[in-house]
Length: 324
Image (tube, rainbow, N blue to C red):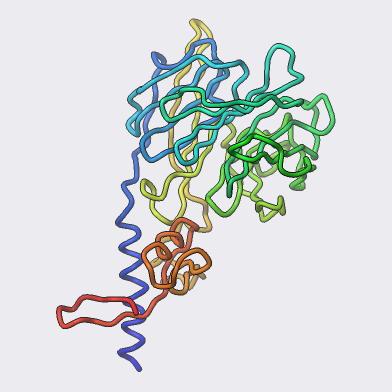
């Protein structure tokens, strides 16, 4: 029995180390004033792919590598806001200026070529992809939005056709905000929306695809905020966030990019065991989407934020652990 328990623990430990070893976490970096539009204002949104980081100003989309080296930039419709990346496509939320009574969803390829777009009858900001659906912030329910309010509007659009797939919904996470959604991102299971919160309220609302509120996080992240690809950041869950520096005389914009891991997954497995904290383990991987004890099931569990994989292993004569 002791040997079985030991092998069971080895199975958890070995597979956790394997998943962590896959990550090549980028280091914080800064993109300088020579890259951005000096009159384009602060960073509105960011979107992370394995290859690059996409950055939105009101007037410009910029693509940089994970050291901050610029790869491409284009002029875009003002006021371009938040952006989202999924499977080779970049989605942008646009509040059309100067009218400020309509919006656009635009879709670009990885090289910033426009693929398709649609108009929306409200100004929009905040956009995220989850399970084939774009979750789009559609402003405050009551205007003017600069006044403190609790209810904001969220829409849901098919990511391919850009047609609405559900009724627009009121979104209230229990705190007063100004304006509306600033950024929305997804970790593949949950959504995170950032706001200009009022009177020290938490600035991030965590919710599911049915818009049920799951919790909040206290973090200033309303100038660009996105979930990092697992290949770059590992399975425990890390966000990349932007902090802009805007100069007035002469006009200039630069931006620093850093990484943040939510407190729920910040502690390592060893630290959680040492301090007797609970941790989340996927039994034989994430079996709702892949065969149990398969590599896809293990990888998907990591992508969803599990701290460990539970499986049973046999040791071969060569002392190699194999799941069974």
